[in-house]
Image (cartoon, rainbow, N blue to C red; front, side):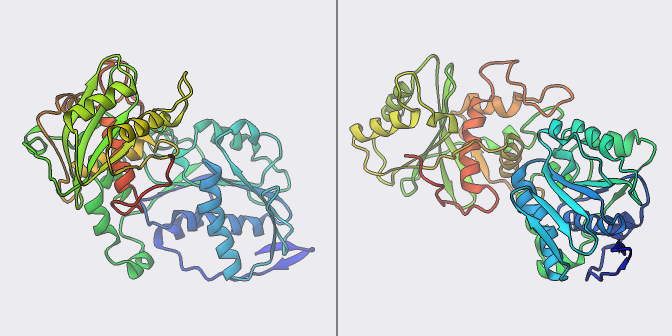
Length: 433
C-alpha cells in the first residue's frame, strides 16, 4: 500500500514468503538483515522489501546496491525487474542513469554499485537495501546510514541480505556486538521448499562439490572461520600423496605461475573428475624460455598433446614486448610439438573461490577425494601444509616465505579453468593466442 496522487494505491504481488522471509518483512527495525545459506531466497527478500518500502514511502527515493555493477545488474536488478514484470507493476526504467520510477507512487529507486562508496554521498534516502552484504566494505554501509535522513519518509529503513563469510564486520555489527536498532533474521538450511521442488538434489550436489568448511558456510549458513590457519585445510599427506605415472592416453597439462624467483609450474593430468599432479618445475631466477626448455627436457614428446594453463598476468607484455604465452607458443612451435592448446583466463579468478575449489578437490563435504599429488612435488606439498592466512584477515600470507604459494597458485589456475562453477571438464575458455 502506498500513496499515489493524494490517495491510496493497492497492488497485489504473488509472493508466498518462506518463514524466515516473513519474519524479515515483519521486522520494523531501522536496520535489519537477512542471513542465509545459498538458495534461501535472499535476493527475493531484498527486492520484495524494496518494493514494499517504495509504496510505503510514496514519492520518495530509495537505493538498491550490490558490491559490483555486474553483481547488481545480473542478480539483484534482474530479480527486481522480473518481479515487477510478472506482477504487472507499472514502472519506467532509465538505463542510462540506472534509475527506476514506480508509476503508481512516483517513488524512485537508484541502482548503485557500492565498491566506490564515496560516490554514495549526496541525496537523502527514505530507504536502502544491499545485496551480498558480506562482500561489501563496511564504509559503504556507514555512508548509506548517513544518507538515511529523508524528513518526508513514512518509514526509514536500511537493510541487507547475505551469506555468512566468517566473523567479519557484518557478523559483529548484526550478531556478536549488535548495534542498537539492528535486527537480524538467520534463515536455516533446507527451508526453501520452492527450490527443492524444482531441484530436489540441489543441496546433495553441493555437498559433493564443496569442501567441508565451505559447505558449512555456504549450504548450512553457519558462521565459521574459513580464513584462520591453513589455507589448504583439506590436505592430508597420508591421503593425497601417492606414486603416480603418466597416462599416455591423456593430454599432459602444464600450469604456470609467472613469478620471477622462483618461476614455478606443475604438470598434471585429469581423468574424469580427478586431478593427478605428476611433477613440478621450480627454477630460481629463470625466464619463461628457460622454463620451456626444462619442460621439453623432461617431456620431449607426448602424442596426446599439451594443454597450457596459468596466470592471466602472463598475457601482459614484457620489456622486450613479448608476453609469456607468446614465448611459450613460439618455443613449442620451434620444438615441433604437434598438438598444443591454451586455456588461460582473461583475468585471474577470485582468490577465495579458487582456494575453495582446490579444497573441494582435496576433500568434499561427503568425504570424496579428487586430487592426488606425486611425492616428486615437494614444494607443492609444502604449500599445502604451510601456506596460511595473515592473522585475523582473509589475505593469504605471501611474505612469510617467498617460495610459498606459487605452486598451489599454478595448480589453482588449472583447477579453476577445468572445474569452476558452470564449467564442463575440458571446455575451453576464449583463446588468448
